[in-house]
Each structure stands twice: as structure tokens, then as C-alpha cells.
Length: 258
Image (tube, rainbow, N blue to C red; front, side):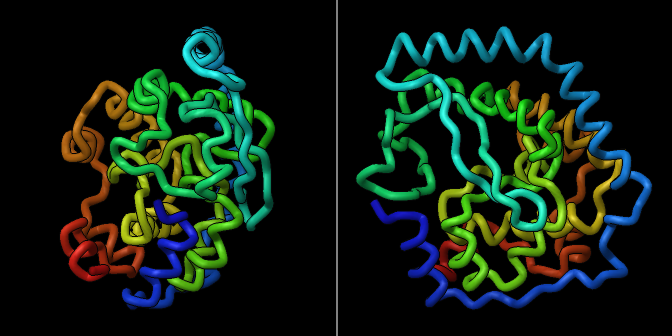
């Protein structure tokens, strides 16, 4: 199995991407919602805690009873403006699984994922401890997926403008997370970057509320298309127009990378 870094280095030699830059006048740090968003995050996180805490404890107990190692783990991720922080999650893979493989994107049917871990990932219960990151101010409820710092340099070389997504706090959920499958390689990261850059340019209270509602539907198995229709989420054409990066289908990206 190739490490995530090796995949990025290999594919970046074979796939050409366009540079990207968000000019200052399109950045939203000065908006009213940007100032209120941290308070909104904390208030909603506190409201979710009575539901989340019992689920976290039950999930942690299942992990401890079914596999060796700690129930929780921390991992360094990059927050707003590239500030590192410790991300909290419930362990879904065998303990110390990256000791031999290094940092790897998880693939469908990944043998490192435990049986209980597969359920936790499918239900997204493993993400609930990130509410603590929200309360600490490391993360927002809605934002781009947080990335590992050891992957950023190679991702930025392969995807010019990748660091632009760090203009906002990473999120427990996000537009890319509710509209695209999990990252498995550089091509999937490339497509998600378009959605992240759309969010950086367009985020607001109404968009965040729709993404949070879509997340609840995703947890119970609603399709990406149904979420988009029910909550008026942007189409691929809108994403491309605003993010100014072409949105490619998975089939197109696969052919380009081969």
C-alpha cells in the first residue's frame, strides 16, 4: 500500500492542475457572520453535547471491548491559517496501524478498519469527539476537512492554491463532506478542493444551516443528490463557476491520472 505522500508525489507528476488564488476583496473574514460564527459554533456544540456524550461513551466502550488499544486517539491537523492542533476521534482502525505503512488514505474495504470501526465510520459516530475541538476553538462545526500537516507540502505542490482552504477553520462537517465521498487519493482531494474554495468564498449562516441539516440526512444514508435537492446545495456547475476550478467526475479524474 502506497502512503498518501507517495500517491501525491506520483500523481502530481502525471496530472496538471491550474493555480488558484482568492483575492482579498472576495475573502469573508470581515463579514458580520465571520465575527459571529465562533459563538454560533459553541452554542450549537453545547446543545449537541447531551446527545453526543452518551453516544461517545457507548462507542468508546464498544471499541475497547472488541480491539486492543485505546478507545480514543489524537492526531495533529492544521487549523485556520495553518495553525496545528490536536484532533480528537474515536479509534476505528487497529491500534498503531500507521507504524509500518505511514500516513495512508483509507480505501474502501481497508483491512486496517475494525468491524466496529466500519460501523462507527458509516454512522460518523467516530467524529463526535471533535465537538471538543469546536469548544476549544480549534474547529468550526462547518468548514473544510482538516488535513494532516505532513501531507500539506506535497498537496500544495500538486494543487497550487491548496493552502487557500486554510483561510477558514476546518469543520466537523462541510460542503465537500456532504456532497463527495471520502478522500482516497490525490484526484479525490482535487475535486474536494473545488468545493472547499467555493465554501471559503460563499460561507454564511444560511449555507451553514443547510450543510448541518444535510449532514443529518447523510448519517441516515441519504444520497448526495437527495441532500442537494432537499437543501438547495450548489450544483457542480455552480461550484466550478464560483471556485474557478473545473469540477471533474471521478471517471474523468481516474482517466487523467492513469
